[in-house]
Picture: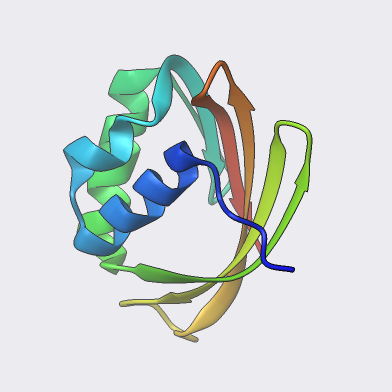
Amino acid sequence: MTVKLPQPLTDYFAAKNRHDIGAMLIPFSSDATVKDEGETHLGSTAIRKWMEATTSKYRVTVEVADVTANGDAWRIAGIVSGNFPGSPATLHYNFTLHDGRVARLEIGA
């Protein structure tokens, strides 16, 4: 059985693969938190800066390879390709949704 991603996650990955910062930000709540590369980004302004920096630096695309869900917690294994050593690599995107928006995202190996 294939798990269908909720719309905010579908929208996020589609925008990420187009490198569309504005569209990537839309699924996030204004007070969301992102943890990536050992740093925490809180709120829309900080998350936008993180998106701009990482998109410019790595130019990644993500192919969703595996999905598990537990209530509002979603763990997505993605095959990530881009401008970084070891590309492509599998990364895990751990999302927490709240009221139909991304409240938290943590990215790691």
